[in-house]
Image (cartoon, rainbow, N blue to C red; front, side):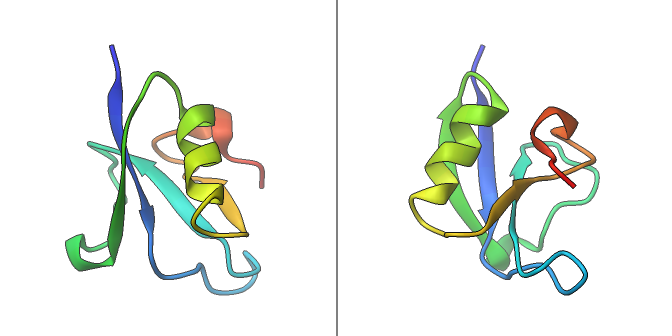
Length: 72
């Protein structure tokens, strides 16, 4: 079953080096609604992160909702 993903328009502040963080619907630490760019539905977080990289250069997965795609 596919889940909905979105990425934060605002880059993370240091020490995260300005990454745009990808989140899955239901995340306990989501960005505000007006700071979300909807990526759509994906079968896994790797697909969602790849889609976010088409929009933003520096992307990482949220450590809370998609730890498998969190690289820091």
